[in-house]
Figure 1: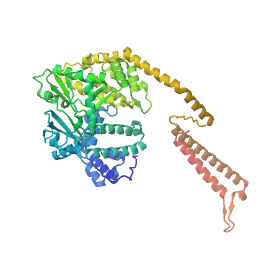
Figure 2: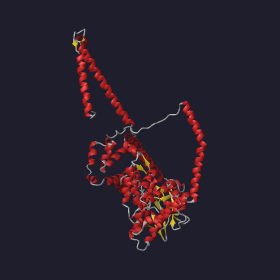
Figure 3: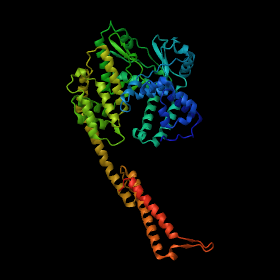
Figure 4: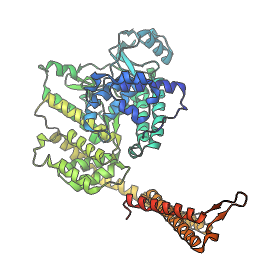
Length: 566
C-alpha cells in the first residue's frame, strides 16, 4: 500500500507537485503517481484523460522517463544527466536513455543578459568590453554564452547565468528532499538505496555547476595539471570579471570536434588526434586524479597541432585511495582475478545491506568470461568498467560518484577515439599510464610518505590511548557505559514471540474457563445457576460459560491448523 501523502504542504509545493504528477501521467508514468500516493493531487477526470495518452504508452519506460524529465525543467534535466553517470544506481537501458537528455533551451533576452553582467561586474558594458555580440553562441538551462572583445583586443567568451534558475533549482531540490525523506521513512526499498543521501549529493553537484567561480577554479586546476602538455590549451579565466553568476574567459580558437566528425575530417590526421585526446585525458585520470568529465565532441576544440577544452562545470576528482583502487581494479580485470575484483568493489563501495560474496563473485565470473581470451584491441575499458558498475547495482553496492563519472567519461572517450581511428586500442594506450601510476605507488618517496603517515597515526594512537582507557574505566565505575547489541531480524522475532505468548495466554484462559465451568456444572444446580432476586430468573451461567469457552477453544484450534501450526 503506498504511503499516504502529507497534506501539510506549502501551497507552492502542492502546485509544483500537481504539475509533476500531471507530467508523469501524461508521459505514461502513472504507476509512479500511484506508488507515491500523488493521485490525490489529480482530479479523477483529469487523471483518466491524461492516462489515455496512447503515444506515450508505445514508448519504452526509459524513453518516457527521459521525456518527462525534459519537460519538468532544468533541475530534473540536470538530475537526469547526473543519474546517467551512475550505472551503479540504475539499469543499463535507463542509463543509456538518460544520456540523451537535451539541455538545449531558447536563449533569454540579450538586454536581460547585459543588465545582469553590468550589475554583477559593477560597470557599464561599454567600459567592460570594446565589443559584445548580442546573439548568444550557446544557450542551456543554466546559462548562455556570448562572444566579446576586451579593450586590449583579446577575444573572450562571457557566460551569464539564466535569471531565476537558482531559485527554481533550490525550490525543486527542497521539494524533492522533503518528499524523499517522507518516502524513505515509509519504504524499506528506498531506505536500502539511501535515496535522500543520493539526492543531497546530486543537489550539491547542481549547486557547484551554478557557481561560475567554481567552474573557473576547475579550469585553473586543470591548466596546472596539464601545463607540461603544451599541445593542450585550457582557457585563462579573467578573475577580475568573474562572479558566481558571470564568468569571462579566454576565447580559444579551434574547430569543434563535433564539426570535424560531421565533415569526415578529410583534411585532418584523425589517428594523431585520437592519440592526442586519449593522452590528455589519461594524464588527467591516472596522474592528476582530476579530470574534465564532459568530453562531449562540442567541448573539444581541434587546433593546428593541439587541442583545447571548454566547459568546466562538470569535473571529477579521484582521491589517492580511489585512484589506487581503480588502478588495482584495472589490473585485476585484465588478469581475470575474480576474487580480487570482488574485494576491490566491496572496498571502494558502500553496501546498505549485507552482500552475498559468493553471488557477487559468480556475477563477476560471468562478466570476465566474456573477455576471456580476447585480444586487448577487442576489450573496451569504459564498457568493462560500466559492467562492473552494473554488478554493483545488482548487489546494492553504491560506488563513489566520481568513479561512476569516470566510467561515463571513459565510455565517451572510447567512442570518440574509435570514431577517429577504428584501429585505436584504448586499453593498450592506457597501459603506460597505469604502469607509471603503479611505479609511483612503489617508489621509495611514496612508500616513505605512507610509512611516515602510518607512524604518525600510531604515535597519535599511543598518545591518546591512556586517556581513552581512563575515560572508559571511569564510565564503567560510574555505571555510565552502555553496551548496544544489534540483532538482525530481532523486531520480527519479537513480533512472533509476542504472538506466541498471546496465543498461549488465550489457550490457558480458555482451558481454565472450560475446566471451571465443568466443575460448577458437576457440583449441581445450586452452584451452576445464577439466581436474579428481583425478577426471579435462573440463568445457567456455568453452562453458558462452558459453551462460550468451547467455541473459543474450537476457534483457537482452527486458527492453529489454518496457520499450519500443527
